Picture 1 (cartoon, rainbow over the protein chains, first blue to last red):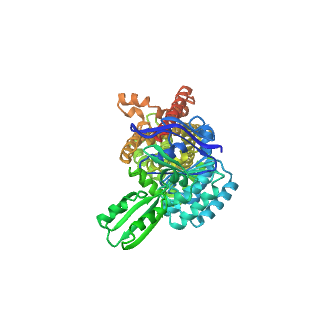
Picture 2: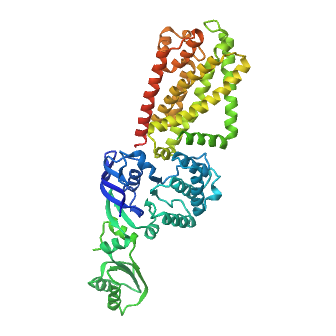
Picture 3: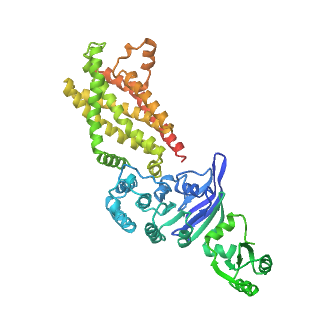
Length: 308
Length: 249
């Protein structure tokens, strides 16, 4: 597929500290890419570089093949950026804020009306259009910022915490809209909500200390790094002898115990039956089997304790 | 872009109609009552023998313009910037920083000119000053050049300063300088000779001096105009560069 965003050895320093270090990757047109990582790992800085809000200290960023630094005016018209913090004009209404952006990008009144109707209907924003942005909740402001970012019909949408401050209903509406526009626009976003990322991505970039640690669809990441299941068995009594017996089962990975609960990982569910078989004469109170997700993937990477 | 900024100023006026109208009417009136009226009883006549309330008229117009332009620039480049509001979004639009500076300034000047025209009508009504069309046109021309100079200085301060207390103190000093250091209210010969000489070289006072020369002799000081336009151009470039640096773009 054709690249929408391309980074070539991009680096960013702030106060002589390396925030991004020689990043090289591409984003296909029309794809939905999630960026995830611990706080201060450089995710938001990366979005700022992609949006043109900040310049890289070295390397190049291309949008549709155009160098963002050299072809600034052209690339900016292609980008819609929604920052994390509310940056609406406090003394304008929600609608005026959106229309101001439309005017800045020379969008005709007719198109502006159509887009406001389409996006505000989708996000249930209509009742708030005539209210000052200062006086509406953070979630409404965030939805207004999303409409503002879409009003000039950008090809690339860059979102920093797209559902920040939102209630459950707004989160659902926002993701419905983002999934709808994905395909015609490339969407790249940062989020700390792992369930949302699990449900909405073509690709996940796992970030740590300014580098990409992992890159791919969640299924592929889990398959290539840790295709495990997590098990928990609570015994009536888990003594040292039993714990030693269970942890020495060859297929059991990374065992540990907490009170009378035995935790372990295994590549397949059959490991569970090996353990059950070994502990068949013990009284068990509770069982739990879980397929690992993004949270476990990140925990294993960032806690510095690989499963193996 | 100017269209977008203009519409936004109109929306802001509409959204805060009562305080805006209140300031629009009362600022020139208060200025007249608190500054011109008492000074008239002290100075009475200018050095060239013109009645003070007639002599001070263009100075008051320039002061009204300076005051009207300030909050627009302050809001755009200081308030919204330090509070991380819409300025970043504007800076991401497909325009150069110099264009953004120019657009904001032009819109601010249009608003300041409208306010100044209102003040002008008010003062001519109160003091009964008679001016011919040529004098009015030249006053407007000098005022526009002056507002471009002052606007750029306001922008320079608004971009350079990050702390609100520093901004308030600097603005306060600047206004004292604008009001008293440009011969708007007090003629420069009233100052000690050394200060007078220094103030004569102050480029901000050039447009007002050009107007006074035109009124008294009918001559146009083209050299001074050229210098003013050159300074405005340099300030534009400097402000564009500063904005770019400040926004780390």
